[in-house]
Image 1 (cartoon, helix red, strand yellow):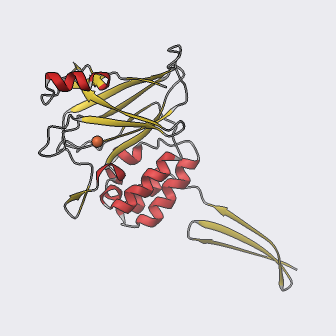
Image 2 (cartoon, helix red, strand yellow; image 1 turned 180 degrees about the vertical axis):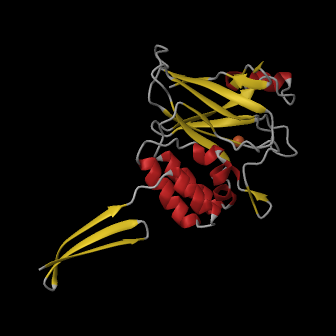
Image 3 (tube, helix red, strand yellow; image 1 turned 90 degrees about the vertical axis):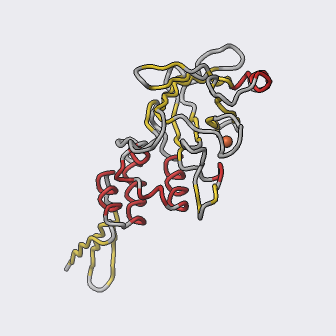
Length: 240
Ligand SMILES: [Fe+2]
């Protein structure tokens, strides 16, 4: 006599086939979540389960990972620094977008679009499929605060991972960063390409802190800033 037991617990479905008193087969399958499921869990303050749901939904390759950075439903996850680090880890493992928004709509600051391109240092040929990690300060010059202290670049609040398309291009909607508080350090956006261990920064040639001497010193990092319909635009080229 074969008994079949089915149960649904903690997002996993188990079916046990029992023959007499011994279990002969067990099938366990992780229920696939969506980002909508994850958003519901965030709303219920069930953050650990939300994180599992984000992971499982992004693994399908059918959801936009950047939604976690730009849909306010996920904003509570960014408040706690350890959750933010976990979100970053998950997003680093699921990079599919060439174009994305890395800030929530309520992020204060002047809107900025980064129209980037990655090319070969040797011959200028576009580099497709390169994963670029970007991070920056907010409109107050802060990376992220923990008990009133800026944790700096280790766990920034504003970040994203983007992948170059077949023409080596990527684009990111964000806000213009500010200089570190009470400094004349030029405002900047950091970039890192972990695949090849390269990093650098984009500076803004309209930054009022730039003295003639600083302009010379930072010349290779300076980006021309244009404006399209009230949105600032920079178009950096990363040579690798
Ligand atoms: Fe920095």
